[in-house]
Image 1 (spheres, helix red, strand yellow):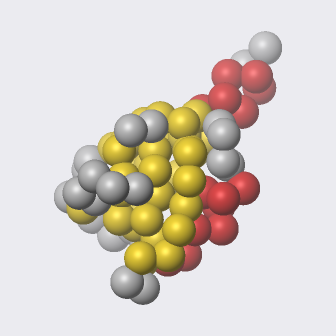
Image 2 (cartoon, rainbow, N blue to C red):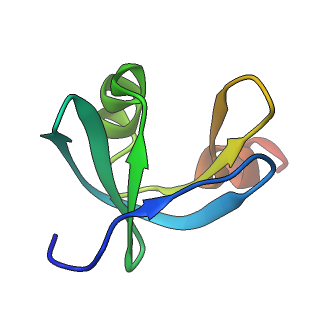
Length: 77
């Protein structure tokens, strides 16, 4: 992941395919679509499990929320 990582601000959301996850200076560096995003290290396991799926990561005032969008689309039918 060569582009400058994005540091999310409260109420930012990143949507895209979870393409990669790695450790970076004590944080989780995730490639979501074309955007490298710095996240808390506890997000790494869930993002690794969602690799290849379309995800949304929302930063709130207090924490980060992850949702797998493809699973939601299949559950609706």
